[in-house]
Structures are given as C-alpha cells and as structure tokens.
Image 1 (cartoon, rainbow, N blue to C red):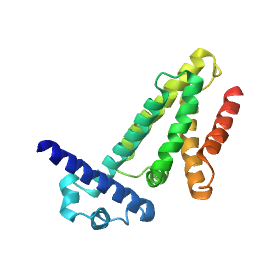
Image 2 (cartoon, rainbow, N blue to C red):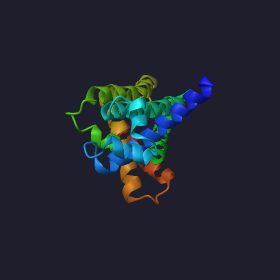
Image 3 (cartoon, rainbow, N blue to C red):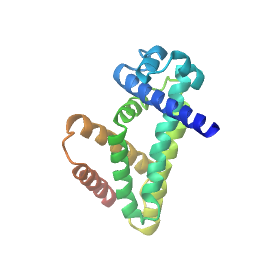
Length: 197
C-alpha cells in the first residue's frame, strides 16, 4: 500500500514538474501561477501545495530533478571509458538529454544568466555537480596525455558544458531535422580543434 502511494506521489510530482517547466519556458517564471501549473498538470491547486510549499520551492526542486538527471546521464555515459571516448560520450549524452528534455534545457539556459533569483545558489551548486563529471574526464585526459598538459580544466569543462547546451538548443530550435550524429560530430570537431591548440 505504501509503495503504491509513494509511486502515485512521485507520478504526481513528475506531472507537476512537466507542467511547470512547459509553462515557465512558454511564459516565464513570474507570469506562471500555481493555478496554471495545477491546470496544466490536471490536478487541484491544493495538490501543488501538498507536494511543494510554494512555486519557488517547486521550481528549486525542478532544477534539482532536471540537473540531477543530466548529471546521472553524464556519469553513466563515461563509466569505464578512456578519456577521449568519454568526451565523445559526454557530448552525445548532453545532446540526447536536451533532445529529450528540450523545454527544461531552454529554461536552464535562460535561468543560468539570471543572478537575482532565490534559487541561484542551488542552480550554481547543481551546475557545478554536472560540470564536475566533465572536469573528471578532462583531468583524466590531461593526465593520460590525450589533452594538452596546460589545459585550464575548470574553464574547459564549463566551456564544454555551455557549448553543448547552446548548440543543442540551437539545433532543436533552428535545425530540428538535422540528425543528432551530425550535430555530435560537428561539436566534437570543435572540441578536438580546441584540444589541439
């Protein structure tokens, strides 16, 4: 019984996350109301407050959930791979994630530039966790000689994360018919050129 109840609660939270991310991507955080989120999710307004104390808490949990999924995808992608292959796997994982969660990616991209939000510290920590997976791979590449010894690991890792995010959103908005393999190869070509300089 408890298992079924917790599964239902998780399903409800997932529906609320999906509704919130779609609405916030469409009309912005300030213009999105709890009523809007409840209506889009097909639940009563009280259900939103039962699961999240406020719209801000819901959004913060949404960031934890979404970036947590990306970080888990990154970890799974690089597991057991040598650095050069791991970098390619990270690029592919980010493109696939953003294709799957396009609205969240657009939201994440816009929110990373807003420094006046209540959840900015949470976003910074979560982004750091995702980028750390990339940094581990880049450090391993430097140690193995696959990447230049003088490579600035924090900057290279942030750049790879950011470029992947921007390129993926650009691809899905402006070139949605372009195959993912082409986008991955183009992005890897840029990464390889940068790594050789």
